[in-house]
Image: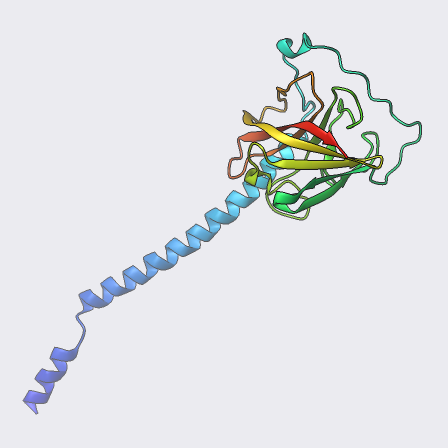
Length: 216
């Protein structure tokens, strides 16, 4: 009988071992809970910063150097304003096809569509610059979420008034989110400028400059 009791005592797990296992499981559980919490907060913060940028009073800030360039012919806007798409931005590399509206349309809103920034020129304007801004991040309105995949020499298309304008990206750069930004482009060429929040960086926005190479 005494021998059986001795064998039972040998098989028992030490209370120190039990405590160590329990503490380890608690720590692992706490880590995963805190990780998921932090990730969720990061997503919320990213979306908040994206919205804050587009709610600024001014989007474009032209530097003094750029003001010395040749004046660009003013865009001739039609008398009637439509809430229908007047053109499309197409970027095959990221499977993006999205319409844009008359800059004066009530639907020309970054919360609803890609935004035609005030001061833009449409593609048929000589030496003009079509400036489009869009959300990145999460949600249905994050139309520019995949722009970070683009590189110099990638191609973008704009269809407008029955013509297809072919652009090639020539420059990609970042700027801090201050509610303003500077656009650096060749003022002797027709250009397309795309603006969105930088991927995985809530403090900056990324600007993509593309130059017109042909019209089809």
